[in-house]
Image (cartoon, rainbow, N blue to C red; front, side, top):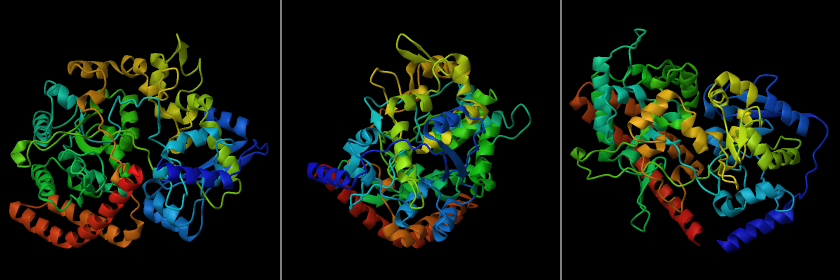
Length: 543
């Protein structure tokens, strides 16, 4: 690994542009984000600071519609913005030649912030040619990883359901659906007469992980995408899980809930915006998702003071009645660099050096504090060396309208960032600061956690496990088998809702058998490919 790292760094330094002076001419940088979003206000104070210091204004386009179709259109027409975030389909941009290699621009002398940010991770970030097209937007920790909450996958339940039930410890899938069913029986509608929905499933586009991924977690594994990897055998056996008996058990349980009326048929055709609107209304009691995926709904509920309708993440597994043995949950993983996710610089960008210079400066301690905390004395204060917030300042950070005028969310979310702790012990993220995290949360949330004897939502979970040497398998590029991979996904999207909506056990069995017959050939292709890639990554990491 040392030889590979040395070769990569030598190549980068040989080709590098070692110094980028701040250009004075003002420019407008076009930006695309592969997620829906809201435009910042014209007088947004952080963007004004960026404009004043760097001479850069942003013209931002957010995703509207299907991500893959949108990226396909842009690639076909070579319609590339300067900063290009392809979301969960960024590999399409990389393989389509839309992004420049960043390595020639990053050196220890010329860009020390960026260089130090990625130097230890280069073997797992660059491709076999030593190229790097996107610096991860998340997952690079400084000093200590902070785990206050589950930001990734989990089963979620409205806090009021657990409050109503007397704050039970819900550990299994059966316990989870049982408490939801009992709550709806006792409370079919909310105080406004709107009917509660037991369990929602987002199936749209790449977010169909809400439909597919629960199986691996119910079997006690963290997020590896569409495969389960045996990390204990020494051989790293890798297999698809969607065609296994333990997958059928999950969809059979959903079928039971569907036939009881706890899952609405429209859940399978909801758009992401419709899903967020449902969650924001407070009528959905449970779902499987990842915390970051419905943050706008959480913010809307908090802004409306609907804290009881916000969600608690739970690490569910199958109980022993399913016949799969005793399963220990392991949802939380060690820190995972979000490989190939975030901003790339497009080949159409006329000023790549200025974009690199922007990222270099925004990664400085000063700008990281501005982007993550705001302005000292205005958005936070410092007392005895600790960065703190008043209740009003903290509440501002939960207010969507305030953030549109006072935070540079679009740039911060997709740009390289520091996570973990600062050298003085303060957290880089304002929400990770212990004093802020518990003391400034709502009275409802304090009481909710205190009822469990907890100080943070992560206390519901086992501690993070050590990250496997291959990282997380969902990060592996699937484009070499793209046609088979697309078919693998399409078959799941077509059959799994049909299986869940089966009229009875006989129909479910018939649908499942038909699904298995159709998907098995693609599972074999996918398993063989992923097995080879996992072994390659393990060898590379342990070389």
